[in-house]
Length: 613
Image (cartoon, rainbow, N blue to C red; front, side, top):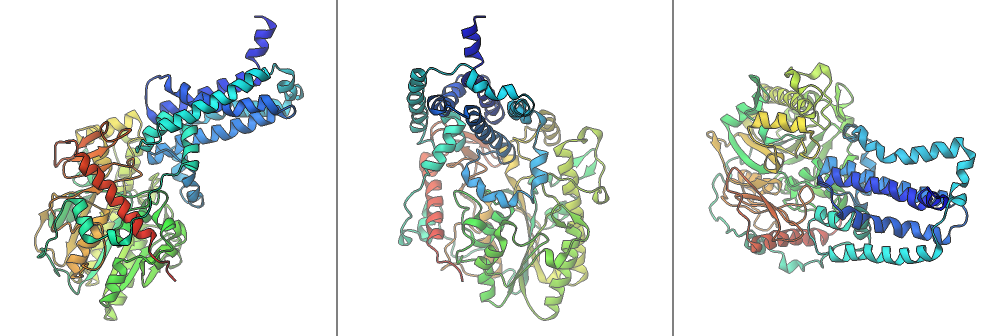
């Protein structure tokens, strides 16, 4: 090989370009799960060159250091994109920096997703670091090595910049964030998210009415609802189950029932098998927010962080208005997910957190579900003994990802095929969660609370992301479910209403989501929401629904009576997933637009609320 060619091929510009190409394609294969394509080359390489060319043009000293800085920054962006996608199924943006304070709490979940081969993305950085440390001559490589001709660098920079801008410009109208990142390139998408934040002007409050919401949903008001005041005067207890999916109910593995207590509740009470999660980055706290407001989650970030400073119209305030105590119970520290502010915004009378439950019998982030239920029921019994009625939210936590349940809590031994799998860990953790629910029900009955209480039980969000599962784990799921595990299963959470007011077992087949819980509870309790703007439907009195989705499904996604719809780069190239209640037919474009309209109304309304004291 001629010396000039060898020098060119070993120049920093070429060497760092080659390493960056490897990272571009690694992220492409992991995130987009596509076969080889020239698209990453066309969308990723110009952005890299637009950063490298100025180094060749202007840097005379410390050139290697500048290449290393750019390399570390770009590598970290790709690594963050891979890791975030494996947990959330979305492309990370700068908005995720809002969650940095939560990382220490969920580090177990983060590390569980860290496949060893992902770390190869940092191989070159480690190698360069070692060479710089132990070989002094390497430090002058960038100076001694062949540099890019200044004229060539001067040409490459504007051309690469123009191509990058072209990639962003031609894909700016794509509503699906994943498709947008795929066709822009991840680095371009990150820049686009910073400098071209999509925002619509807020609607005037006069345009956001109950009638407008019902029209967008394609529904009509029901003047004589069933079960009105069926739970009037009773305590209302809402149990939110961590990462609890609907497929668990009725599931057995080699003859072992996974959720015998939930199965019993399902068979003896009101059961809604077609409820779907609607949470965003806040996960559990987002579910709490929607339960108590019937508003949609914000377009970016967690509701507790984005809306925690607002004076939110809420279910706790409605219950306090009729003389109830409004309480919430959670074994973690209240500062996690900004809950202290969220609970003020929602108007709870009192919250109970780690300071109440202590550190005894710790599982996941706090005291076990058994401790949670034991101390909570004792406190509720005390309040009832004082003649107080209450609306209570109880947040379970022992079934949290990555489902590392201590051996002392395991109540089931799964077959060997589940060893060292996320699916096996999930089933074991949720079987314990179900065991603790049995203890909870028993204590409610022992204390006399059961007959005076309506119990509303639901899952907060999915526990097994389809994009986190290995091929072996997907095979396990298919073997258990008798079908491929996909969005209709992943997003499906259970809802059971038990106790007073439930006169006979019944299965309600209608579609619903988190925003529908508040009006359903209000109907049972006899609380009129005629003057209270809300976006959900009373699930006891509706046969049709339209659920706009965001975050875990790309913007523009929706769930209707028959279908989960996910847009492509626009409406027409979207894909559908059939629900058990339908055939997966493509929704009309009008329905697609109405779902977006609902989100816009909710965003506009909440952002114009005054701040709480």
